[in-house]
Amino acid sequence: MSTSAVLAQQEALDLLDPLRPLRHPHFDDDDDPLLPAQPPSIPNETTHLAFPLPPFYTAADADADAPPGPTSIHIKLAVDPTPGCGGVTWPAGEVLARYLARRGPRALAGKNVLELGSGTGLVGLVAALLGARVCITDQAPLIPLIHRNVALNRLSPSLCIPAELNWGDPLPASLPRPLHLILAADCVYFEPAFPLLVHTLTQLVPTPTPPDLNAHAPDPEILFCYKKRRKADKRFFALLKKHFTWTDVRAPFRSHIPGPLTRHTIPPPPLQVIDDPNRASYARETISLLTLRRKR
Ligand SMILES: C[S@@+](CC[C@H](N)C(=O)[O-])C[C@H]1O[C@@H](n2cnc3c(N)ncnc32)[C@H](O)[C@@H]1O
Image 1 (tube, rainbow, N blue to C red):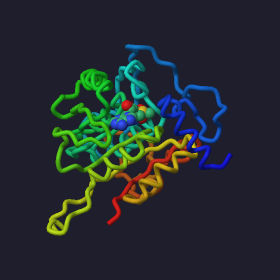
Image 2 (spheres, rainbow, N blue to C red; image 1 turned 135 degrees about the vertical axis):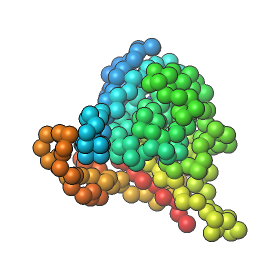
Image 3 (cartoon, rainbow, N blue to C red; image 1 turned 90 degrees about the horizontal axis):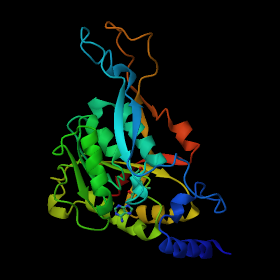
Image 4 (tube, helix red, strand yellow; image 1 turned 180 degrees about the vertical axis):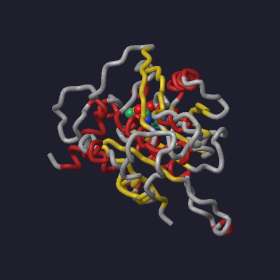
């Protein structure tokens, strides 16, 4: 069968069963056993996740006489598959959450953030615990679970705002402005939604119209974490390419920890910009962490 016939057949099957793509862990292997590589979850289960903070946040960034700060962000997460596939955490979500924590509070504090297709809200919750004001969005059935997770993590509902956003629909009024950061993890899996997601991204980062050309605020950063499952995903990137370019994320990184952390730790080495140090491990899982930029 030709590639286009295979893709057309996959689209037809996806329409009948929208979760079908997520049940195939390897993009080229449609004969693989079903269900993703993650522990099974049951309704009303609560999990605990921890994501390390940057090494120097706890010592050199703090006052020399202050007690050491936390070394990780801890999240309590209610998971519940009942409202849909987003009711459990997905691999790209965990990669993006880990990356945000690694950037640390200095990078997120005071920022206005939007998460698309949040599912449990994991990534947005990490951003909020790092000090950002976050609008955590998904389709209506997931919103009660996100509210629950905001409460479980003792986040203020005025700083961590769950909101319904169906891709392709008008943007929610509760969106914090100006928007500094857009997050999306594991949102490429259902072909009929590909143009809708691209449309929402273009709404969020509009091209400036002629009278506004000089007054245009900087574009928000878009962190897009994607797990490649199927050849058909390339249709999403073909659509995305009309409006955006992308590159792998590179992270500010300090190269080593000079001995045990003490109250009088020697100053940290200078920041370098390198590839995300966790990249090799998630690349093995066919996960990419991308920065999208609107074409001008
Ligand atoms: C595979 S889950 C990923 C959830 C979460 N980002 C994570 O990484 O754990 C995909 C999410 O996209 C949401 N989604 C799918 N189609 C959508 C649409 N048309 N509009 C808004 N959200 C959508 C689903 O409800 C689901 O929560």
